[in-house]
Image (tube, rainbow, N blue to C red; front, side):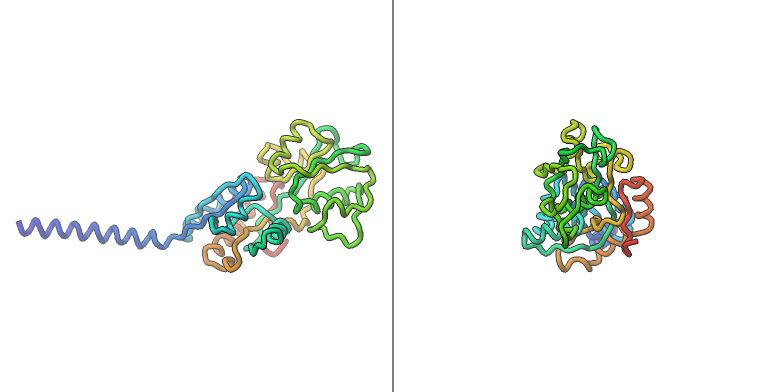
Length: 275
């Protein structure tokens, strides 16, 4: 009877040690919750999930369908980071919300494009044509730059691209009209319904709608654009080990090559050194 009791005790101790061992292993894993737009941000994050797992990071991805909530949730500590925006958008949000969110690093550029079912180029737009633009003020400089480079407008002296608005137009050679009170995610729908003479669509929404920015747009943002998408974090979190591991994975040569291959130019890698 005594032998059986000792054997049972030995089994209990062995199981307990096994459970303790498992607990120690799992406690080393850090959970990192990152908010992201569906395409391409969430897809890129999913690509680096296995690599981060090896580094002890359990990456959880929360997908957002708008540009409003990700920064609010990050500021409220419902997220550890977000990945959906560029620096001008982040600066604009911080200014309006007394925010202190900062960039943890560059990842990619989504060239914004102008699309039309009626015309094949910007030069074909008629006098008084209506251009549909989203209500994302941070993107206005991008749109104006495309139009300026096409010779359709000029900007007032001293205008900064990253803060420019349509009121900064000096000369409007074709008297273009701009409708700017539209939701960014709805722009592909306006294009498919043939509304307006031209529609400005962000690359992530264009790709999500089955469009190829390189082939389907009548004008596309240049690679030298300052509107590179970044990972945003709360002030003071940039140097946290988990965030540094996330950025290392996103900026690795493997990930940058994967972005180039998968999106074929619709999403362009933005190497850390800016090249």
